[in-house]
Length: 91
Image (tube, rainbow, N blue to C red; front, top):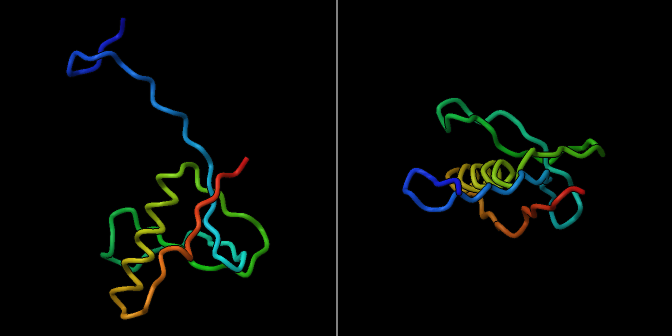
């Protein structure tokens, strides 16, 4: 039996699931560069006029960009509704 660093049974992590972020009206969010100094990863979301999907490689990356966008807009004084950023699994 394979053990992890703490001596407990090793559990294989789930494979990343590709996701996209949409709004309530069906607009598709695409990744964009965050302002300098905002975060090390430098990724945020913007509503795109493109009809094509932007697929994040995993749900974690999509939620990370979502949280950055919400935090940035809140800092600017906008009233942000987190339920407007819906993360959908792409199949």
